[in-house]
Length: 82
Image (cartoon, rainbow, N blue to C red; front, side, top):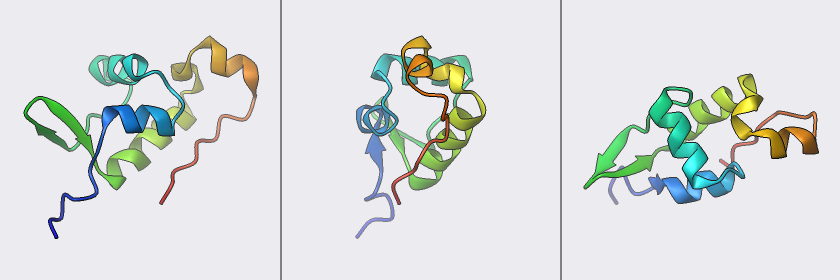
């Protein structure tokens, strides 16, 4: 099996972190969230390490979730499914 078999697309990453996909991509493009390790045919593909780095960035910067999420809870810890 390929070492890249566990890569996931931006839509799934956005679902995991309960973000709209456009917000995830916006913050990646602005440099607020780390870039994915891989791009194939213009698609951004994320590894487990990428997910951990995104989780760290979101934990440190909860404002990246936007006002709707910030109003729901004061707990800003992000969980990563292993």
